[in-house]
Length: 166
Image (tube, rainbow, N blue to C red; front, side, top):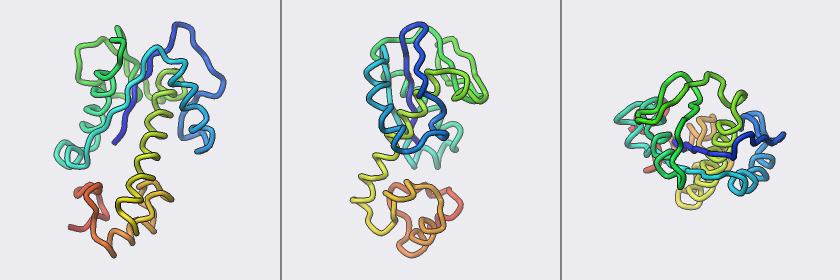
């Protein structure tokens, strides 16, 4: 689980920055250095598979978001959070369902998180050959689930995820 936080200068806009799910891999990769260069601050953090198994996916994602905020070089005075659950911290915040389409900082954070996760999967593909991680990026495709059944779960697999048999 990878999360990111981005602070842009007041009034910042960029026509290409939008929900990472609506962008191609190539578009996200092109925007990554633009976002990191234009941002006042950005942070990228994760929750481990073990934390996801222990906490559940929602609490682990909120943990990763809090960690991303905590890594910001400039402390934020307000947070816009994608979704309907606040991040457990003392910073004033507003949750925005569909925030990727409503807030440039949320959209940029989704791009940084997705690119970072995809890059991690490419590295994991070298460490754990046979799972096809560089192709499906860890999503539960038929190929990925078959590889887990054939090879067993790797250390990066969540043990509580349906399809992972331990």
